[in-house]
Image (cartoon, rainbow, N blue to C red; front, side):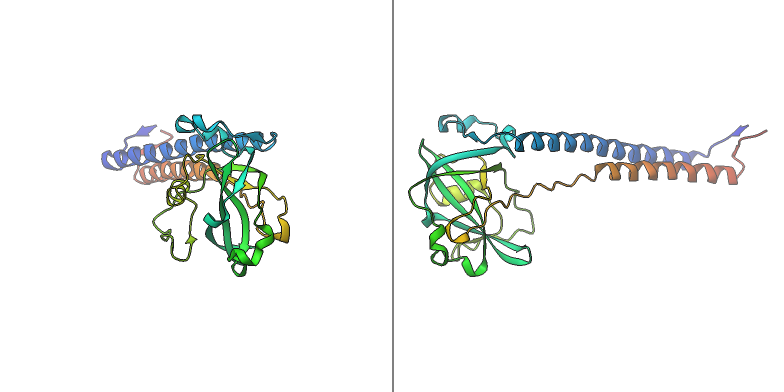
Length: 241
């Protein structure tokens, strides 16, 4: 057997192989994390709706364990402070999520995504029946809305049109304090008049990490095969004497 690898192709191959394997291992770690998150969400969604923690504890509260768990809250909606978050399409129709502050009966504020309204129903006067008055109890899923990115437009405050759901900024503009650090996505309970349409929580989390890992490992195997073929073709590696 002859084994005389060339220096520079081998050094390059070792470095590239280490990077590809490291990327594959990273995706496997991400896979384990995503599977754990999905298991947590599934367990949380099967639980009975719970009450929110007392507002005195919100300042030091870690909201992560409460994400994607059912919850209920009692209070009074302040409809005059509702916010409209543009969404390009729900079942083919553009419109808005209606975010309304709920003044909790036990103190503090909760932002509630009451659901979807089409563009023609943005004005609250077109859905007056759904503007619930008095004390109400709302049930839904606690979520942490996605952060804005470089492509997210700034809100048009004059028209009350937003493009994401920043809890802190909405609370600041509405002078809401203290505000619960998660938002409640209202469930499918129908509102009078049909709007807003609740139950808009999207939980279809993608889990492509195994495929990504196999891609990186496959590239690593391909690189090794190319390295072997290169050296065999030049007589630097012979498997038989």
